Length: 443
Ligand SMILES: Cc1cc2nc3c(=O)[nH]c(=O)nc-3n(C[C@H](O)[C@H](O)[C@H](O)COP(=O)(O)OP(=O)(O)OC[C@H]3O[C@@H](n4cnc5c(N)ncnc54)[C@H](O)[C@@H]3O)c2cc1C
Image 1 (tube, protein in one colour):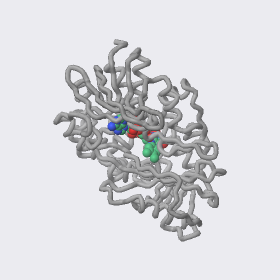
Image 2 (cartoon, protein in one colour; image 1 turned 60 degrees about the vertical axis):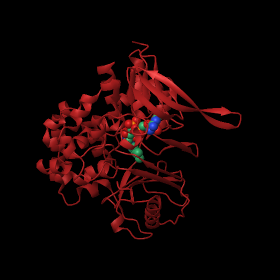
Image 3 (cartoon, helix red, strand yellow; image 1 turned 120 degrees about the vertical axis):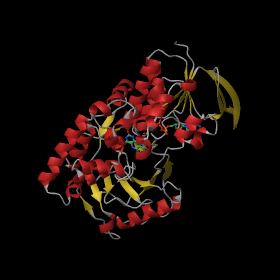
Image 4 (cartoon, helix red, strand yellow; image 1 turned 90 degrees about the vertical axis):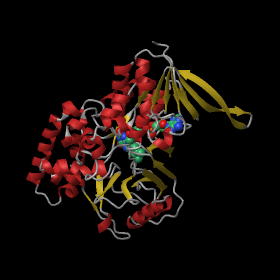
């Protein structure tokens, strides 16, 4: 067993956590093959003026039990995020940004007694769903049609519609889609009782010390985990053949004096773990997908999300975190972060359209327009720009039709396993929980 050969494709949160738990279980022959020149995937950090900034995953709440445990083990330090506020683009004009408190924005139109009673009722409903939602994965979710319907329908059924603006902050402005679209099971998997507590205390400006970020950034947390794992970077996988064994053909980079040259290698494994995006355009490049795999993975929808940073010494935001409410049009920023108020790096999070009609130029123009309202002019020279393949998920209809039962039934067939955001929701903690459960069950 310790020598079982396991190949993991992708060294993001899913691949690294799977390798980490396999190692804990005694597996010594685990290889991670990563396309990029760094580990972390959507956990991506940079350093500017001696401080770390997150360009991908950033927050942890008290619900992040596994991640917090590993962080302690690898010595990754955390700090508390600063205050938040709301920016309303529709009430702003050039040079006159309209800011308000989160509490004021989320309670607008509802009297405080009704609002706080709704909070208590939501908490109760969510606690009662813990036996279903705390199990990693969504197997059997089709047996609960109330959880596969869009989240706004569920809120209406429970007479909790007055909480919609509150939920739009972590769900819609963070790129998980409109509440009329996201299936309830995803929304409630995300909003655990602990995360809801964090949301309420944060919105009410009560400082309990959460949410937190990693001092050195989320990517550097994963780098610490990766130090103890067999990760090969800059790998271009050409073909994976699944027969009696798994045969992986790839190229790796070699330095020959001043040149970097590819060298082809073929390795054999007993098991394959796919921890890269499970979309057809990624997998079709190297994998002989079965009809069942194709039928499932073609149903995956992404919410592409971009992050643009600018260095703007002339701008100091009133708070480190600015949520844009009411939700802006696609192509305009939905979330603005000045992680350190004494630092000039400002990040703009923008939801893109699925059809790919919105271009990078549109996003930059959206940022520039927002900055004009905030009182500064910038040119096209941004600092960083990334477009992430974010939130792999399926529609309410596909979830109700048993997508997850079929996906779970596929685990282990043809010696192949699947991990990542699709399986248990696009958050680092849920991904890590799933990897742990998969390793425990199958290895
Ligand atoms: C802007 C943003 C903010 C976020 N904020 C938070 C947050 O606050 N808290 C939170 O918990 N989560 C957050 N997330 C979500 C979190 O980052 C993701 O859920 C998680 O990092 C996804 O991990 P993964 O391993 O499933 O996928 P990925 O991170 O996408 O990893 C997949 C890996 O596979 C590699 N790969 C792809 N193709 C190949 C190939 N052909 N061969 C080899 N390797 C390949 C990729 O390079 C990548 O390293 C955020 C994400 C974004 C984009």
